[in-house]
Image (cartoon, rainbow, N blue to C red; front, top):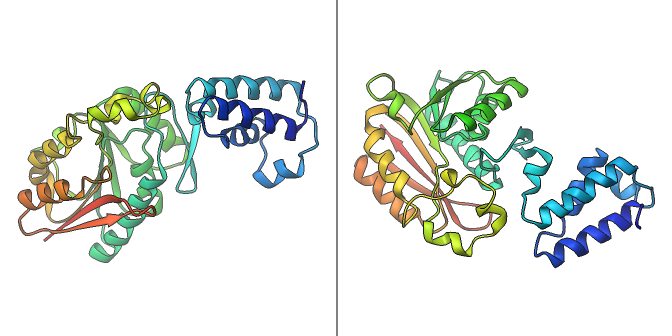
Length: 284
């Protein structure tokens, strides 16, 4: 029976490869249970692993082998340099969404300068977008909305942990604000996966992450279409709208925005992997 760090890593890598999972997950899980940085773990290659940590690690590797995402096993994911609590009620924050944050901040600063702004994040999930925007630009007023109370509870916990002051509203997309409130900045990473893609996706995603945060009709555009009906009712004359999209959806989403806001400047942004990943519309 292995007891040393390098032996445990070798076993985990081999086991996960056999199961068709990411072999590197073993290293992330072992670091989690040993509470070590990567460099400390490598410096401890020949050290013995405490019995309790070894037990937790083995259980976690088996769980991931069965398809459980490691973020749900550990209970968190790193996003924009901060740790966000996650569970099965929320989508695990992705690196692509960090790019949405970065590009939104750039455009917001250029467009509005240091003005007091009102921003809403639609379908906030873990709160990653709303909380990060508030912490990166503390002067803005941020509202986060989600249709699921369970998701909002996770987001509220993250806001408390990260000491971010923002408002949470339960509701369907922008409905809670129609006729009541208007915003300068509207951001969203909505569900955008066509239901037909489910068959070809990893069970790590489809059997564990909430389907309400993943799928959006036959072509993946159902939520964007609904947003186009609501956006004109809650957006200020001068505004910034930013969406994360699925690769290959930029033309369709751009057309929806241009049809809704004929005078808007609409821009498609590609992510670090060269995929069309964001669409921005600048109004006024």
